[in-house]
Image (cartoon, rainbow, N blue to C red; front, side, top):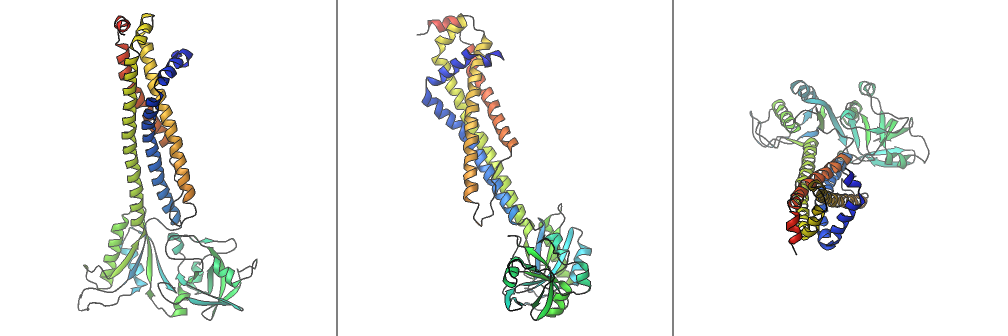
Length: 420
């Protein structure tokens, strides 16, 4: 290992590189381009994955929304275009028949999907807000961030049909003075008094909800709007190891059986499968990462081969010099090690420059996507991945350096000294 720290060794390496700076620079660019592509593409894919996870961080990955539509086929005496309606009893049936379901929450709403929002009044101030009737289990599927001092709906609220409400941030600013405590205060929702028990923090993503939404107990919503056992839609979360696409098919099949719908009717029940979208985005990100690895390694290999070619040319140009060194007592190992060290040095320089450029591009992408609505954030690549790519480059640089090194060792001193 002494030759690595020998100043004469490095003097000869830099002298060899300096003889043809342009050729060396082009070769280094070819090598650094490979690791640059890998870091840029893999980091960009990770940014997309991170952005999508952040956009839906409050919602379970394996979740879906299911609602009733209308039958498109006649079945068991029922005509086509029969309107269908989900019922509370469907929840129990689905839970009993489908073990892949972890949580299921029936939901009702006013002021969503084109309906008129509720009128909300406090004193002389008023606003309009969508109102949701929910069970506490809903927060197992879609987390609700409640400000300190408040709470979400609990089981006693459901059993006693309490007139309590969890309001949104904007509703608070519209109905309350700045610094005024909303918890414990009363508001009127469609002329019925409700006590505010919490203020939820709006988290973008995770569906169609906003910062004006008001949540009330499901049973209270039933009485307020006389919905009976009708359910607008079901929010369902499957277990993490379940196939969420198959889970959706199973849910629809059970609902068709309950409501006597033709099993082949695809229009009867609609669904929005967040889990399927998560899987697609994750699969795309993984595919892009894998593609970046393949392209990066191929480009690195091509660049490293070009380093080998340069060193072969350098060895040929330095035939007489190497012959003199051998004649003066340089051992084959010393000559071989110098050529390999030169190859590894050029590879490391190219790798470090490629990493710096790749990190710079990812930083620029992050900067220009921070204030956009596009689900994209923190495009980075784990350090072990970067070090792994650099290690692959060094290994390839070492292996490719063996070719010109062996060519240099094979030169006979007497033949080299005769060459002009």
